[in-house]
Length: 418
Image 1 (cartoon, rainbow, N blue to C red):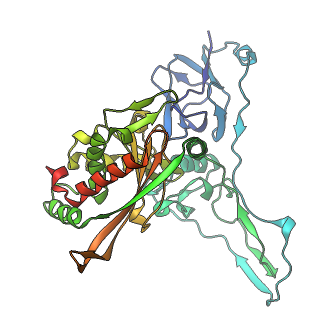
Image 2: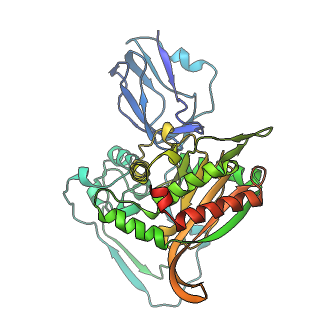
Image 3: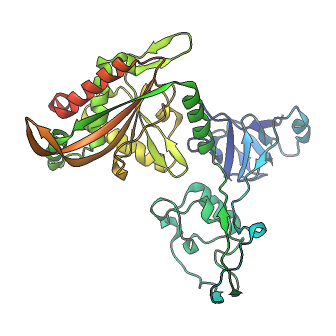
């Protein structure tokens, strides 16, 4: 008998998913283990595996549509079966179609004419180009949209990181063409207000919800301390000169934080309403910026790992996050989190606690400055860190003691290298 295929819950925070692309079409024979479709969740684009044998009789959701978990997306059965009755069963919320963004002049708010000489603009279709599209950087969703519309990716200029083509780059292009199809001449005062509306991704929706809950639900307070990073930089230079592996400043911070957490377990805790969970294991979440928002993959048992192991894991997570290949096991189980914006030149900031953690460490840039040491002025590489704490779990003195230990470890890093 025919069976319905429903949108599965592919992460602990997922409430709906977007069908990026179907890998099978109606009428295809399918077997257990086949990948039916690619699904965009709140964390990554993941493969929808099939667990039924038969024929794909019906696809109920088009590529690009978002549906809640448990909604019917397809039917599998034997050829000729009457499957339509299955769709008349009690239904979940109707699918919502993702509306493409559009860059449009604000026609209802036309500004007053500007007293400048009339200007003529001529837009001419660009000549077709040929290139190997497999070498072009583009998100999976962008590739799917381009294929559906018949758009050549070689004609698109990407607006994502490092020129990567993303969804918004394709949304205002007509099917079958990625360049204007005719010459358009506009004469006169043409200045006008314009805007772009970008549909909210599943990831961004979840980030917004979880951080709002954290900010409103957990009483945050903040502790800031300056750390002299001279010895960390010297140690890093010496280690990297060996050429066996490359260590970053952030790797030192992760390792030092893990060691400090073992000495101050209340900072490595969670608020559970009627009890506080004090974690004996140290799993550190590392915030990684991606195209649609932020992911926090977890370095597990970080206190028991060497700097080289931490460095290798963080690099692998960063690449997997950018490629949207992280799996639920990669981002679950954090007991403490670190957000580092130092590489962007940010000297100091505060971060919102990442549930279920009680604390998050915001790391600023290492900057060369003048300090007073033993009554004399000297140059030093200083780094400012700010820890956001959940006051239901961590008191000021507890947080301050943790930061004091972190400072001591980073200012004498030989203790975390050996």
